[in-house]
Length: 376
Ligand SMILES: *Cc1c(COP(=O)(O)O)cnc(C)c1O
Image 1 (cartoon, rainbow, N blue to C red):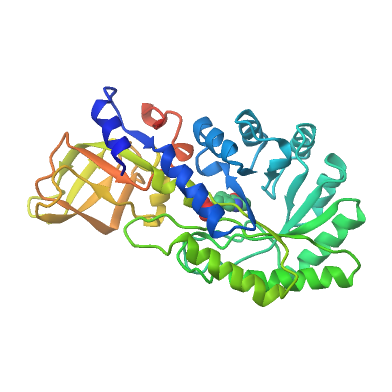
Image 2 (cartoon, protein in one colour):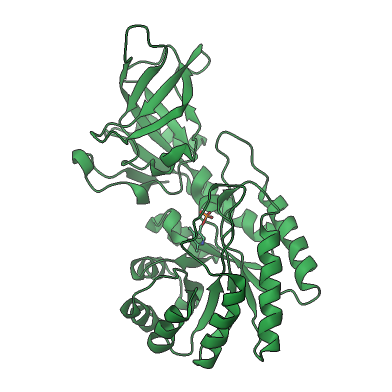
């Protein structure tokens, strides 16, 4: 929560929940990444917060962009990024979307199987491709599934196939899982990457790049290591596994770039109990899973919540959203302590909500409009 956001909310007149992002914080985050990993290019993961203001700021600072669709590529271009600073990082692409990206000048593509390599070879001839490998995501609060990536042993075949089809077999990528609290989480995947580099060299072609992905955390309720600790640990792992032949590297921070820059203001719509002697109160907000708080799914991400009554005695509460979907409950397995004095109509602040909120907000489920956002 910054003074600029507080000031903005004080003068806001519109009704309804909103996200306010302080662009100064995004700028500081970018500079911290650049300082902590000085020889690494930053590709901001656009999906975390694709607002034109964020993209324009980052483009101006020299950031590159990791995109998942033609629409995201167009957003990055509109913000001032040149196509050589854009990666089409989704391993699942329609061939006509690859062709469109190629037309727009994009020459860097993610793959994780030979079938996708064939599409890229046809629709984006001569481009650079990197192969994504599986990574178990241990230590991450929002682990990624087996949906993306292949076994390291298969990656060698995928890259060799790309090389044979006239693409540039450029490197390897992985993602250690989002909100990764363990600074050592990159070690195992870097060991695998070095193995793939060696194997490819033996087969007669050389890789150049390791894409270290995202995973850098935002502070929610618990402290997280500083970005410098991640930089140091990654650099050590690179030295350990690549010796004096450290490859070109890139990172793709999403959450770590924008998460702590945003605060959502919401309103308490109702406070009730399920029986006269129920010791748990239900607190219903005007925002829920469908209004931007999708990452509370399985109670994975636990946001810090500030109320105007902080300091008063607290009581465990179930937190829920305003829609008529019974899945629209935020915290129930582990109830959330909130002041006993909290009242209907109170405005609360949900911190650390700059990433993965506006983009996960439904268009008009139950007639609730998408999450309003202001970038200041
Ligand atoms: C989502 C995503 C990221 C960003 O991950 P964070 O954990 O938010 O930093 C980076 N790279 C790829 C390929 C992604 O899909």
